[in-house]
Amino acid sequence: MTIVQRVWQSGWAQAAIALVALVVAAGVLWWRGPDWGSVVEALRVVTWSWILLALALNVVSTLFRALSWRLTISQALPPEHQPRLIHVLSSFGVGLLANAVIPGRLGELARVATLRRHLPDAPHGTSATLVGTVFAHRLFDLVPATILVIWVLLTAEVPHWAVVSFMIAALVGFALFTMAWLGARRHNRPVMSQGVGRVRHLVGMGRVGLSVLKAPVPLAGAIFLQCLGWLMQLLAVYVAMQAFEIDAPLPAAGLVLVLMNVATIVPLWPGNVGLVQAAVALPLRNYGVAYATGFAYGIVLQAIEMACGVGLGLIAIAREGISFAMLRRMQDEEESSEDALDGVRELVDDVEQEAVHEGAPVSR
Image (cartoon, rainbow, N blue to C red):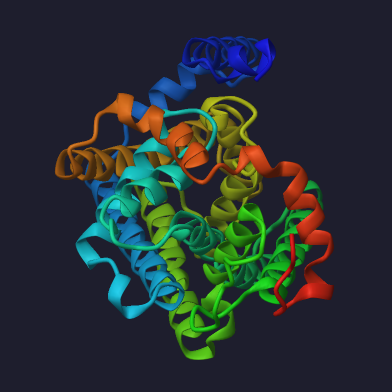
């Protein structure tokens, strides 16, 4: 490991980079942001009972998403290694907390590591399989997102710059879904570990995590649950509008939800704070909403999402007995436990030969 890699993986270095990015973002916001006096005034007249209802809807949305992941896992692991529902829910909560408070999208690895602790008898490579289920679960967002985008394009007042963003995100998403579907492998199909490389074996186990993509009924169920999660989130966005007395139709809430997701695809700084609020406030001006009010509304929406993730995550880590320091260590443990970094060259060679040697042992 080089000195640069060691510095980059240092918690202090990551915290310093995150702090610098946050300071720069705050400076840009203060310089080019809204009228902060009007933002504060908009926050003072909020009806907080509506905010509490929006928070409750976000919690229900999270529950549906967790159930969707559980259905995905059920297709990837054999019956004797199926995790309990409570373990899936708490692992999902740990992932939410990690994504909310730790830079680098650690949440996906954190929920895998947490759930793996409850499967001590599962075979080697199970972590790779669980990573595959996380990837498949994230892909399921494409279906409700596509439905929402089409509905918004047909019914809402969409700015021209937003249409381009929608199209780029849709093309990338469906390309990933197609690749995942072609690479999926059912868990009842044996994954050979004799005579093949270690990393190739892990790639095969990861493909098993995509098993649900080859099972139409469970796939439909998982996607339906994910759609319900998005529906609850849409209702939460609309309910939060009522808290600010924003007189806009439901399609406007759909537009806000889509743009919030687009604004958080690439984490430019912690939470993309400021960018999310601008993405919310700008299109609402077409509905007669003042920019400062829309910006304040965006602050509360992001706060609701953070509160949901942090609140459920704190309950989860209390149940799991996990500290924040352990969340930090999970990333290194998951990488080192499967020796993935030691076999990068072997991974490249094996993937190139996958089509030729599919189903046949490879001599070494």
